[in-house]
Amino acid sequence: MPQLVVRTRSGRVESIHHGYICITDSDGKIVYSIGNPQARIFLRSSGKPIIANALVNSGAIEKFNLSLKELAVIVSSHDGTAYHRRIVKSILNKIGVSEKYLECGRKNPESPKVKKALMMLNIRPGPIFSNCSGKHAGVLALCKYYGYPVEGYTNPAHPVQQLIRSTIADILNLGTENIIVGMDGCTMPTYNLSLYQVSYLYSLLAHGKQHKGKYSDSFEIIKNAMTRYPKAVKGKGTFCTDLIYYSEGRAVGKIGAEGIYCIAIPERKLGVCIKMFDGHPRTSYPVVVRVLEELGILDAETVRKLDQWTFPKVRNDKGDTVGYLHTSFSLLNNETGSFELGDNYPKEGTRI
Image (cartoon, rainbow, N blue to C red):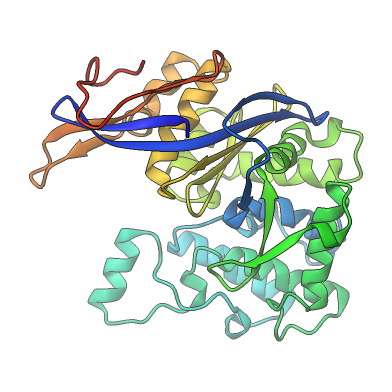
């Protein structure tokens, strides 16, 4: 398996993290890959900007006067801050549905500050605090637009889920029987696709309205929402938000659970799908930055601004730096590391 990242402690390799990378253009050509591009993954939250095509292409945005900021939260994995909750509530108010219809479950907010505040106040978080409440509000908007029942909208057999599945199949020019359905953490269906297919979907997001496809306009609107409101996509001080903000929209990134990270690169019309086998998001962030550096998308100044994600520090319990996460691959040369546990890493704070 390709080694993409190593974790060091006191100059020695402590952990090795494997993964696959696939980069595809909007003509469907694989431009670069490490590992098997046909390996299958569940989209998880990286699918949110893709399934949103069903909403944007329907006319619901116009009917309910949904803003780009609200669309950015619909495709988000937000932190559950007051900023995000206000936007979700605005969507629900516009479509005439109360919070009680959200079926994303009671999940602690991803913002540590908000989670701590709720604990101190002895308040159990409602569904609106879930990082997926925006997506659920968007699906409810789709139900209201078409007159579908709002109850049971997460069931794969519900007409709104059939619409979403058929939309993904249509974009990929497949029959719906070829779209394998699983269950996501937020109780919504998720879809099992190859890294190649996912990277192609993100290349269409990158290409936007300049592409000749049926969904080019909706992809453009979704891309604009994410680039104009990066704070809504995740939250202040998070990787997704920092990447979009500091790259000034040259890289539009979206996290997915279990080590998935996807990127749309508008100026090159490329889509990137990364899967880290250990399933931890921390290992995917330096891989993203390395990929974008090698592709010439991020300059040295932008990489410096993303330093906490480029070389994540390993700290002890006193906060002292005792190691780093280092990328150990070259995308352009299709080379990956060959480290063993305990190896002496060439130099702390650098990459091979």
